[in-house]
Image (cartoon, rainbow, N blue to C red; front, side):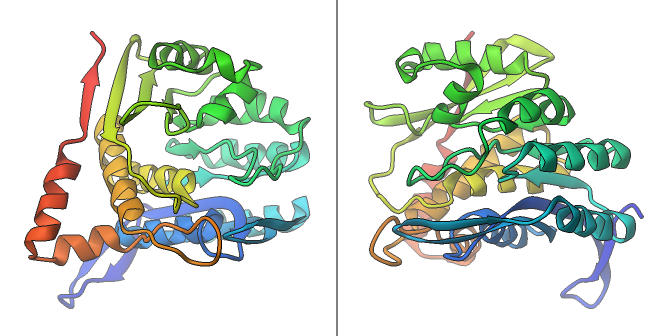
Length: 308
C-alpha cells in the first residue's frame, strides 16, 4: 500500500502519509509516544505507535520505567507494518540490546528509507532510559539504517566517549557531527540547546554527501524552563516532514520552527518542568492577530547558514 486514504474536509479524498513512532510512553503526556503522536497530528500525517516501555513520569521526573518484552514490541510492529505500512519511522526510547536487534531485523525487511533515530539515553531529569550495553547495538545496527540521527550534546558525548568539556563550542559541535556521521547514518542533526552561554542556540546538520559542508541552524534562545519533550518533538516533526516529501534541509528548518512555536507557547503544567504546547503551530497559523504575525516573522528569521 503506497499511502493511506482519508476523507478530506471537503468531502473528497486525499492521500495521507503514514508515520510510525517506536518509543516509550510518557504518562505525563509531554514526551515519548504522546509527544510524537501530537506532533504527527499537527503536521498532517497519520500517526501510529509501537510502545517499547511504560514510564511513570510527570513534570518532576521519572518515577518508574517498565520495559515491555521484545515479543510484545515485535508483535505491535508486525501488526502495523503487515497491514497499514509506513512512509517514515521514528525511534525513541529502545532500552535494551535485545530490543534494538529485534527492531533492526524488522526494519531491514521493511526497507523503510526515512528512518529518524532519536538516540534517547537519559531523561531530562537524569533517569537512564537506555541500558549501557545497548549503546553498542544502537551504533552498530540501528544507525546504519537511519536517514538521520538527532542526538543532543550529552547524547553525542555518550555516543563518542567524549567528555562534555570537549563539546563546548560550535566548532567542536561540527567536529562531533563529523565523528557521528562515521557511525553510519546518512545525516546527523546535532542539537545544541545544551551549549552554555550566548543568546543563540545552534544546531548542526551534516550530510554524508557533503561531510565538509555543515549547515548551521541558528535561533534566539527562549527563556523558559518548560521544555519537556523538546527532543522528541523535533525528531517527530522531522519524521513527519520527511514523510511529506521535504528535503532534509527544509525539513530541519520547518521542524525547528514547529518546535520553537511549541516552546514559546509552553506554560507550567505541574510543579516542575512543563511540557510543550504542540497546538501552537496550528493555532498561530489560524490567528490573524498582530501578536502572532510578529511571532511568525521571528520564526521566519531562523536561518540555515553554511559555514563556508
